[in-house]
Image (cartoon, rainbow, N blue to C red; front, side, top):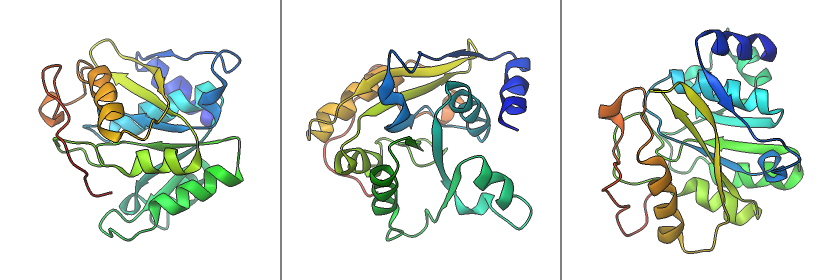
Length: 197
């Protein structure tokens, strides 16, 4: 199933920029922060990149995608349902436990937390990486060039604002599927202060 998924995305014209796991072993055990996220199709392309990289992804998506018919397939592909409407959903704790118990798993999250334009990243992904003691690897999808893959690795320093500013600087110029849904530009900076998970 995963091989078919990869080939279909490639037939759509996408190219993957994926480093060898021997050169960047952290990709196999990390938090993958994927941006910009402005369309459902991001999941389709992003999953193909992860499958092609040969990692064991756990992709957190809203629970509404799961129903009687889709649940078996989505779970098999590594998607994990999340109740985003519940601020006490235990997402951070669940993800940290998964990373601590499985050294071959990576957690995949869109730090914007929504396909609507936002002015700041939600903090949950950073807390997961910090508490689990794993790096944050930046994943991207450039809809202008149809290139997708892995960007730099961020080692959480504990200074959330400074670390996220580095991420914003990397992600800001990447063309998303729907530019009007991307709340950042090379000129914009991450606002100060914490945000909800």
